[in-house]
Amino acid sequence: MSTRNTVFLFGAGASYGAGGVIPERPPLGAQLFLELQRICQGSWGMLPPDVAAEFGSKGFEPGMKVIHERYATSIPTLMRDMAIYFIQFRPHRRGTLYCRLINDLKHAQMLSSTAFSTLNYECVLEFSLIEAAAGISYFDSADAIDASACPVWKLHGSCNFFSAQLQASPGIFYSAGVSFEGGVRASLDIGEVIDHCLTKTALAPAMCLYMEGKPVSVSPSDAVYAQ
Image (tube, rainbow, N blue to C red):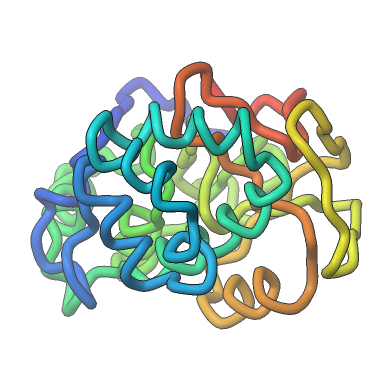
């Protein structure tokens, strides 16, 4: 296992400013609710007007707190639809600044000593690494098939993270304060992520709620989150 002595941390807005993302650049937090409301009309678009007003007047985190307090059983559905929304974003023709950075690191022979971390839920960074023919290790690098795979730490979870050992059939509901252990698995197959969220599970993805405290219901004890 190679030594990783260089770490890049990408915060909120990194993919918004990365350029070269299709179908469009991911929204910033201030625009996220309006986009979810527009795209996910059967879930985010069906929130009560007073809740939607909280998002509009106070921002995403206060609005999510209201849902957490009043409509917690709706959160798994909302988060699955959010995951479907976020997994669509990907680089176009290696045109992102992520792609440029990765190529520069490869040319400087630094990629094997670099780790990446991000607070973002989408996977533009990972798809950029794939386009550069670089391997990815999300969790313990010792589990990676390729020991040279680049560590990618999704500090708030990710739209493509799911429970590895638990199944919950669609139609099951649970509320705030309920959590499920069982490890985390990841998929970078866009079709699989969408199918899993739509037809395979009642659980939320393993991604923190976008609100104060960043609570998470799936495998909160696993060391893939930094709150």
